Amino acid sequence: MAMNVGSGEGEDEAISAINTTPLVDVMLVLLIIFLVTIPVITHSVNLQLPKEQNVARQTKPENIEIAVTKDGDVFWGLQKVADNEDLVNRLKKIAVIQPQPEVHIRGDLAGRYEFVGRVVFACQRAGIQKIGFVTEPPPPTEKPVVVTIDVDFDGTVFWNGDKVNDRADLETRLTGAAAAAVQPEVHLRPNKLAEYKDVAAVMASAQRLGVTKLGLVGNEQFVR
Image (cartoon, rainbow, N blue to C red; front, side):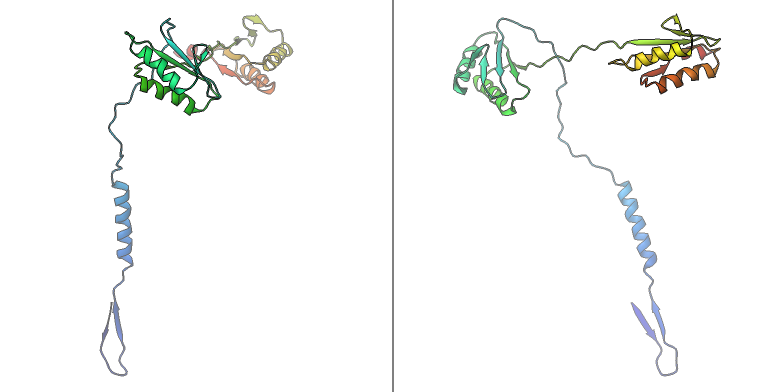
């Protein structure tokens, strides 16, 4: 917006204009405050989700074992099922038994999901109420092999309680530990009166020889 004041020759022409730059700055600040302070609305449907639970399978004579191969073939126990209608008819016969047996489905890892889905749908059509999926249990967790290296107050080093003769003997043992298929955990336990250089020498040898699992233990002795 502009306004001309005065007229005539020889007179200075004054122009008055509104400077909108401060207004733009204020609007930008207000916009930033609005974006920062606006609450974040999370849209979600109120559901009570089932709890995850792994239950060991109980093998009972009345349970029905259905296996699905990677090619989609379905087996009732050890007998191959002809087609989907044959499966539904078999399931309907056991659906009327009281109490109703459980149906355990074993699907091949390489099989397509739709193969197992057909069996689940057949169970639904037949009125089966208890369906379980059989999976391989995780492999047992083995305790790691642990080597404890003690550094005494006078710098003497012990390997699992056995005295280490010298630096060469220690490095021979560390080399063997580093070359193992599964490296043991090396627990370094220095005496609270041991000198730092003796402990550091053991750590340096372990690092140089390729020991990857090294930790300091026995820190409770330093707590008063």
